[in-house]
Length: 411
Image 1 (cartoon, one colour):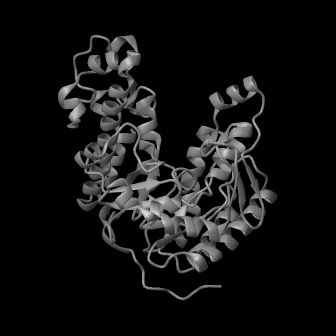
Image 2 (cartoon, rainbow, N blue to C red):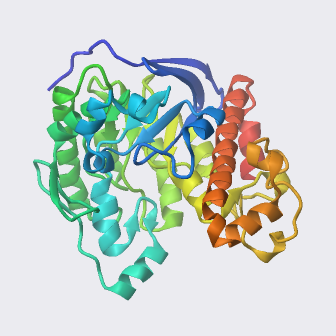
Image 3 (tube, rainbow, N blue to C red):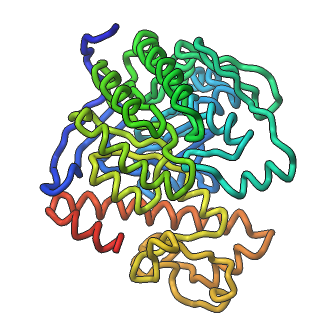
């Protein structure tokens, strides 16, 4: 087993701590730049944030993004990206780039397609679609050596194991990479989760062996919703010389169960999390951000802000009617906004809110020919809103007022 610490290509300095929780601020730095944490990392699945161009990303002051190893391996190909000088040059992005390992696709292309189970439990809409169209075959086959994927583009077969994942991520040239893992759905039995965890732990060691030492490598804690498996995973991963720790997997069989279980799981493993940066994979809902930050999570990645923007949901603060019940959003295509001349959110200073009203966004969202215009404006708003919220959280921790801010948002 690899236990010797190497010189890390990543530095992480904790700058402030909340006295009543595990919340903390820090500075995470790589060769490509630095971010202040806690930080929500926007997702650029295929090396672009959908609906935005380079100028938009610069204007939003996005300092870190996460790209998807599986998709970039298939299109345009990790070797092409390597020959272009890596993701930073390929995207013309001056900031930190994270990549996942490809392990999440065991869930998204496997059980999620077959049964509707996703990261936060069973997706009822997906299940209805599956029942209507009959069950779709899984796009993955899992073995102890790795995972065979069927391409979502042309059905061609591709094998990715820990060695292959490290090679692909090395070709991509990202700053922070993830160890190869199996992301298991919550409906799997204890026996299956235990077997999958043994695989993930084995792959973690192999990821350490084969990864490019110029890239920071995070180990991933798995174990489903089972306490002893999560603790076992946390002990093992934290004992290895990873540059950071990530928490992965699914958490419960329903949306509500997943929310509660997620927070409980972090509590179970918190004693094994140290001063290395801790990343929460695939989580970025407002209530979860507060709950996870209070439990010591430093960074998050999530498609939610950009995805819901394209599906006509826009973030609003409490002062504009946001709450836990409406998930701090409005559905902009509802008739009540047709003649609403107010800003999307009265506290927001994004370029969309400066120049457009709710009525403007309603009209653009309704017109099929203007969907690209709508998606751009909505995405800018949602990302600005979330990046600003994380800035508020950082300031509150430094000022000793995090608990007050959390109570204000989650009341």
